[in-house]
Image (tube, rainbow, N blue to C red; front, side, top):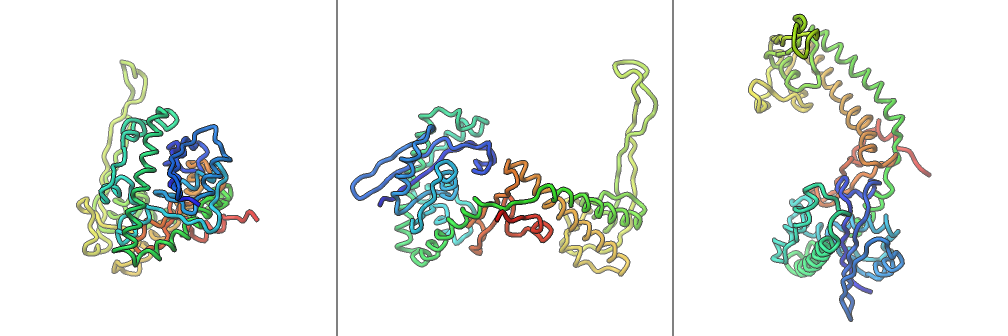
Length: 382
C-alpha cells in the first residue's frame, strides 16, 4: 500500500466547481511513494480509468492541498471513492490548524514560503488564467510542469507537517485526524446536494413581493413621501433627519435642429425634501458618509422610541426580513442554480478551514442556515 500525493487541473468556471457542467478535468498528476520506489505519473484525456482506479485505490494514504476539490473531480471523472479505512491528509487544513484556526483558506504558495520550501510556480496564473485563457488552451508541457511542481511541494509540505505533528503541535494531531475523518463526509454532502424546487420558490417569491409592496405603501403613508426603502441613505434620512435630493428629467420642448430634431428636450430638475429627526441615533452608529447612521436590524432594535415611531421601525424591520427572505432564498437560490448550472440540485460547499471556533462553515450558498421558508422547498429524492 502506497502514499499517494495528487493534484488536478481543471477549467476555471466558478473556480473550477466540479458541479458546473461547463467545467472539465484537464490533468491529473499523482506521486506514488512505496517502500521500494517513487514515481510521478500524469494522466490526460482520453483517461485510462482502469489504471487511474488501480493507482488511487492502492494508496493507504492520500495527500493533497485542498484535497476535497481533487477527490471530487476524481469521483466525477473516474467514479473513484476512497474505500473505508483509507487515510486522508489535507495540508491546507493542517496549516489552518497550525495557525490556531485564524488563517482562513491557506494557500499553497504562502504555506511553502512559511515552511522554507521550494516556491510554487505562478506563471500559469500570470500568463494564462489572469488573462482569460482557460486551462485547455495552455500548452500541455507548461501545464504539466506546473502541476508536477504542485505535487512535489505538497509532498515536501506533508513531510514538514508530519514533523510538526510529532513535535510542537503533537497535541493537535488527534483533532487533525478527526477532521480528516469528516472530510469524506463533507464531500459526500456536497456531492449529493439538496434538491430544491425552483419553480415553487419563484411562485412564492411573488407573494413576498406583494407583502413587501404592502409594507412600503403603509410606510409611505406615514411619511407622505415615496421613500426608496431599499436605500440605506434614504432610510437613515427619514429616521434621523436630513434631506433627500431627487433628480428628475422634465420635458421643455423639442429639438428644432440637428440629429435629434423633433425629439423631446429635457432639463434636469433637482427636488429637495427635508425630514425632521424622528429618533436619536445610537452613539457610535454613524456611517462614513457624514449625516448618515446605521439602519441595520441590531441598531434599529436598540433605538429608544415612542410607541408611534416604534411601529414605523417595526414595519421597516418587517420589510427588511421579507426582502432578505425573498432576495437571498426565494429568488436567490434559483438564481444560484442558474448561475452555477446545477439544474435543480444545490451543491453548497462545506468548509473546515474558515471558522476560528473550528466548526464547519458552509458557503455558496450557505447550506447550514437556510430558513424554514427555504427548507420547505427542499425535497427528498427517496
